[in-house]
Amino acid sequence: MNNKEDISIREAQKMVDNWIKTIGVRYFSPLTNMAILAEETGEVARIMARLHGDQSFKEGENPNLADELADLLWVTMAIANQEGIDLTEALRRNLEKKTLRDKNRHLNNPKLKE
Image (cartoon, rainbow, N blue to C red):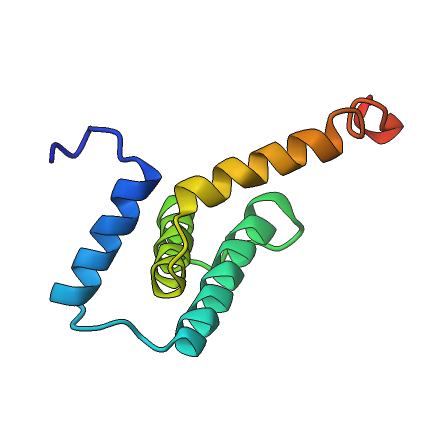
């Protein structure tokens, strides 16, 4: 695959599965993957707090938000694979749910009109 080609969610899940089963040897336990998800979420939060909040980066720190977000995708896909979840379908259903539930909610929110 060319590094510049788009990857579907389903293809990405398969790529993660293949990598884990070959290079990674096997899946970590679901509980370990949940802990890794929390850890990676914290790393994204740390970068965002320093980029957009009141904290600053330490001298010599080299934050990489794109890489941390990719780590979140990776472990999310690993968990989905372990649980037999097709994230393509899950995302499609989630967008439909949000569209039905929130079709007027945000339009009518005065806090968003500023």
